[in-house]
Image (cartoon, rainbow, N blue to C red; front, top):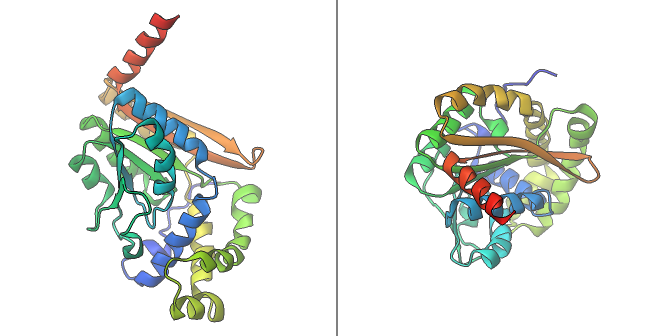
Length: 270
């Protein structure tokens, strides 16, 4: 299946804030259920390798998975801090459940964040929001500024395992909304009585799956950057969960010196 290049409704500037926040809060609740649990180990390995002590999460939405991750990561790195950022910040989640996590309250695009902070830049379920040129620009910004990235995306373009199951998104939203931090009459009206928000979740969820990148497509984007920045290391791959039913694509990137130092340390211990 060829990758779709449509935009999702909640990405549009005209999308009402309430519906965008409903969608990002719903996704955040879902991601807290363990979809990205293995990503924590990869993040920990990158932090150990590079020595960064700040995580800047890009395209966070509600970003409730970050405080959850930090509970584990700060056990290994007690001085670790984290910012959640987004082009459309979710104001409901400005207050964090973890003392080391803050929400950057101004709109912040991915490239602007990468140039502003010295950090490990993470991204969850947002790779597919960028077209090939935009994604190449993000990768090049990281490489040219010698920044550290760790991106993960659960979206895949598989009909039976990923696209058709989206029919379950509306009932999942009806259940997840019961745990909303901001439940109001709007939720009752636009999620249960007039289910506009669940319809948007279904449409956007389907489009997001059809916009997903295969690893081979990401490698095509990275190929010229590897030649242009030989002193920067990119790694792509995937891991599975639910007995192979779900697949998570990941991209790691950092200055090559950290990879060389790791190899040298491994050799010394052998």
